[in-house]
Length: 178
Ligand code: OFO
Image 1: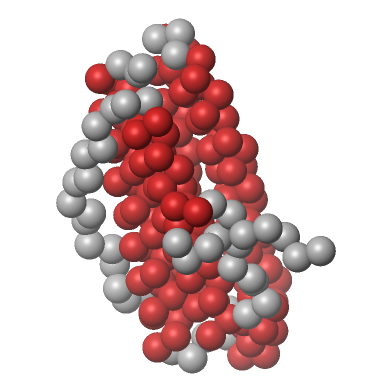
Image 2: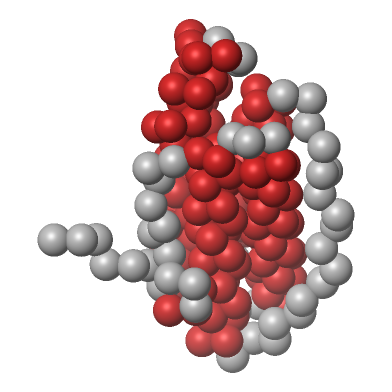
C-alpha cells in the first residue's frame, strides 16, 4: 500500500510520460513531413519507450491497489525551427522529467516507502541514459552540421534505431535478438 500523496505523484508522472510520448510522436511526424525519415524513426522509437514508462507506472499503481487517474494530456508543439531545436527541446523536457522522477524518489524516502523507492530507481537510471542520448545527438549535429550531407549522414544512422518496446506497451520490453 502506498500513500495518497504518492499515488497522486505517480498519476502526475503517468501524465508526464504520456506528454513525452505525444511530444516525440509530434516530432516524428514533423521529421517525416520534411523528409528526415531516420530522425522520424528515432523519435517514434522514443514515443514507444515513453508509453512503456507510463504503463510501468500504471501497472505499479494497480499492483499497489491504488487508483489510476488519467488526466488530460496537453498539446505538444507541431512545428520546429530545426532538428537542433527539436533536440534542445527534447533535452530540456528530459531534464524536467528527471527533476520530477527525483521528486518521487525524495517523497519515497520521506515516507519510508521502500517499495516505491526501489521502483523509481529504474527511472533514475533511465533518465541518465535519456539525457546522455540527447546530449550526444546535439554534439553530433554541431560537429556534422545541421544541413546538407552532415544532416543526411546522421539521418541514415538514426534510421537503424530498432524498436525496443512491444506495441502492446503493457507487455514490457522486447527480448534482445540472440
Ligand atoms: Fe523520456 O523519460 Fe520517460 O521517464
